[in-house]
Image 1 (cartoon, one colour):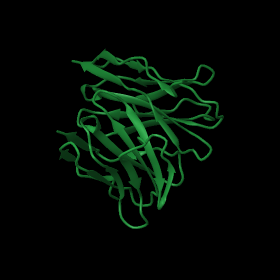
Image 2: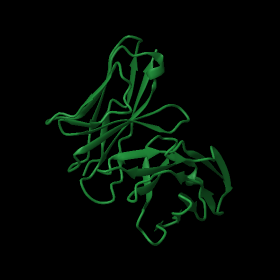
Image 3: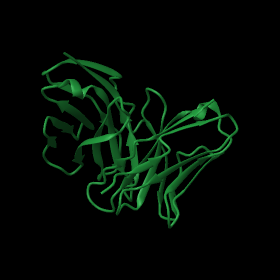
Image 4: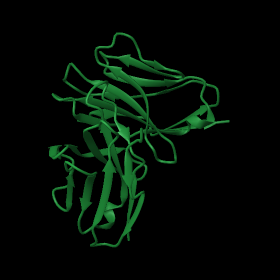
Length: 114
Length: 115
């Protein structure tokens, strides 16, 4: 049973370009969370999605950031017109529909904006 | 107000000794869950231990135990017999909300185990 898969693991973009980060949750998990982690800091909640539905996007910046979780395929976190301050590790996590509700994390995507 | 507070940015412990990492939380929900995660230098997030708000006994998982003091809203992680491989960042987290869909993390504690 594969874990949460994120790709790319590392992404380098120049200012103004777009970054797309992908996340495939664990099999049987229908809930996906995205978090951002700046160096030496904790995880900041960005968005919580179910299939075809954004449940909570209260942590998403109002501009340039968007997320989706289509019926088929991975969840996508999209950052348009990236700036240096977007450089961070972006973690995706999924949780099962029952149980204690722990989050299972991917290995993260590290975005560097030049 | 911070939902999860970890007041120790960094901690040192001697190998084979026990160490306590502090965590306090803030919620008005009667039903919530408390979690600890470990993040080694390689970056992945590893789930360690869970405590439910209605659990009467403190959670234990191997060398990890959770000192749950509900009235004080604290959920400290105790690592017994520290090992060099325990050196990592440790995050306390809480899950709450009407659909249990809010998941908050603290700022973390960096633990260094000295040989």
